[in-house]
Amino acid sequence: MGKVNKGTPLAIIEAGGKSHKSKTETEARKRMEERLIFGTDELQDVPSSLSDNAKKYWVKIVKRYENMDYPLLNNGSVEFLKIYCEALDLYDEASKQVRKNKKNEENYGKTDPAKLEMEKYAMVVKRYGELLMLDAGSLAKLGIVAGKKAVEKKEENKKQEDPMWKLLNNG
Image (cartoon, rainbow, N blue to C red):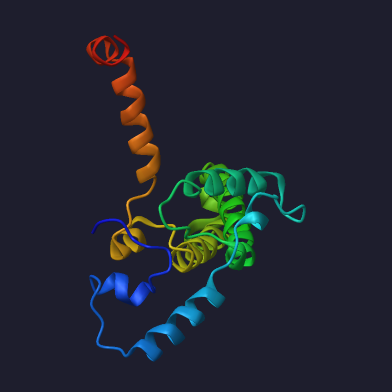
């Protein structure tokens, strides 16, 4: 797509630089988009209200998505991300209980309460994962490649480790 000017409204970027809107409409859209842009500073602080395992999920998810070209997670995502991380933790706990209950399957049969809890939290994880665009399908819809900057940096480091590259560039 080429280099994008940060002042270019998202609608024009998506349209490949062309827009049927007037200059006034374009300026209004730009102002609206600027108001919708949130910072990401609140994501760096793990909420103290989370359980220990949910905190681990928080750190893992924020770290995974911080190198994206377009910040999917921002300060506006904090509450949803809290729910998502807690649901992941509760899903894990229910999953452990289901495995434990498998040994006593005759006591529960198909109505194992832990299994019902696990299914409930699986749906919460799915729903909030989609809302936060954390699943592969959501990223594919957006056409975003996670960690493009990280991949480019890794390739640059590979070049610098190559003996031929060193010879040619360091004299």
